[in-house]
Image (cartoon, rainbow over all chains, first blue to last red; front, side, top):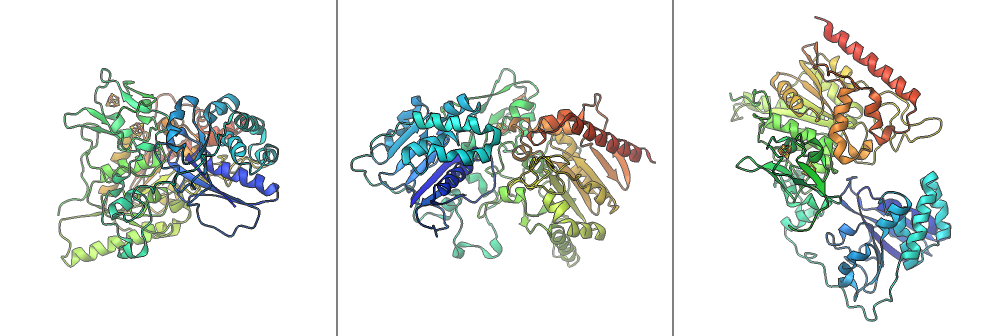
Amino acid sequence: MMEIRFHGRGGQGAVTAAELMARAAILDGKYAQAFPNFGPERRGAPVTAFLRVSEQPIYLREKIESPDTVVVLDPTLIDLVNVADGLKPGGMMVMNLAASGRGALAKYGDQFQVAAVDASRIAVETIGIPVTNTAILGSLIKACGITSLKTMEGPMQRRFGRLAAKNLLALQRAFEETEVPEAPAAPSPAAPAAGQEGCTYAELLQREALLVWDQLQIGCDIDLPGSTAAFHTGNWRSAGRPYIDREKCVSCGFCHVYCPDLAMNFTDDGAIEWDHRYCKGCGICAEECPKGAISMREESHEQ
Amino acid sequence: MEAAIDTQKISMKSLPAFEALASGHRACQGCGEVLAMRLAMKALGERIIVVSATGCMEVITTPYPQTSWLVPWMHVAFENASAVGSGVAGALLALARKGRLAGGDTKIVIMGGDGGTSDIGMQSLSGALERGHDFVYLCFDNEAYMNTGIQRSSATPRCAWTTTCPLGEEQPGKQEAKKDLVGIVEKHHIPYLATATPAYPFDLMNKVRRGAQVKGPAFIHVLAPCPTGWRIPTHEVIKVARLAVQTRDYPLYEVVNGKYILGKPGKNVKPVAEYLKAQGRFKHLSENDLAAIQQEVDERFAQLQWLASRP
Ligand code: SF4
Ligand code: SF4
């Protein structure tokens, strides 16, 4: 059985990718299942989806903890979430990453087999928008087999209708452009991820985990008001952040009023301050600032 | 007794610093609903107890064991938020009568989305309105069941796409009209009723405050744009909500003790097509559809004007 975990952001189609692949595998006469990590739809947030493919019927129903392969749809996730978490030594990583950013992959090289492709560029060139969920499947097929480009046509046609041709082209191009290196000769075992065991209640909160039964309060009371503040949604930003032009800003406060995430706030001396910890990068503040003092620009990782 | 709710009119100068929500909530980028809720809570202040139906706002503020809430907040099922809110209001009265409640008034705030209000919570809401408990009901209407994957509700407008009313050849989008929730609530003859949207934040906050000052039930219907379900870019959320008002698709008004008070008419009314074309869920509409919707909008507005013209 092959177990694959997809990492994407809400709205990027990671679940659709897993599903398309499952359908193709089933057409090939295999058994397959695809499902998302349970949670509400929330655009921009890091999300995971799972895919199992097997020659035999699959009786497992739980999420995949130790995948054979991980697929990363969005390059901004690589430093944010531990995408290699639980990946088997020598396992395959299929990464969407521009050639210029491939240095980030060095740390994985001696543990895993890393196939990289610039799926964002391919998607823009073929589909017109940087939605990489179909392109990345071309890379996955190149790296792991599972199904063929030919079998993908049916499920893609069904899913995308008149947009299928463009998506199939993205699939084809990514298949051709993906480089799959040799497997590392003697993969070193992965180090256990930090905070995996014996963590405190506060750490548990931060990890968005569920409590085990004997940690529940009676009535499911939560005795830490405002505890989501420990969870920094700033890592949901994927398309730039607001920059305030201090020359133009008149401290009117409209950005503060309109920010859904309380990420534009007054300092004690009445200036507006941006909070990188919580800003999700929606762009409302830039759109609504009456002075045009805010612009959304790509983030340089200076903080 | 100290009053629960501040009576000052809210402007940018007198904007309450109070926030009932902490950051780190899990709402989508650019969520108009959590913004509306944040603003409403600013207007209410800290002397409140919130009873929330299941829905987006429950899911995103309280991913158990975390919560964003900084005021007492209770999550109950879709169907019984108003019943539970009535019970809490009754309990407060009983405690006050027994002299066991220190520190003055506390306002009960009940909230739900369109699913929790105009679908599943309708009967308990109707009961609570008729019994006349002292509470403010906030309905945050994003016009579908969004966090479960954009399924239609009775509040989804005609012609809109959702995942359960897809664009078939025979039936492109929802075929049925949006339920007139505000009209239904109005027929309960409660002391205060208003419509609002976060595109007009001060209007929204002041209406919530006015509603909270009346004794008895107040109902605020908030049109809350959802970038995920309406298929709009996140930065246009406020713009689209403003267009809803400017095109008269969603007129702002109050009903105070039965008297309709229509918000100031905008100077140049825009065609409803501008509002609809800004949203992906309406992108399939033909010129004929647009004309039909325009006619509906005009008729609804004329009716509202007539209601407001009565003494
Ligand atoms: S809305 Fe614009 S001008 Fe006003 S405080 Fe914010 S950045 Fe400054
Ligand atoms: S982009 Fe602006 S409005 Fe949006 S979350 Fe960030 S600070 Fe708030």
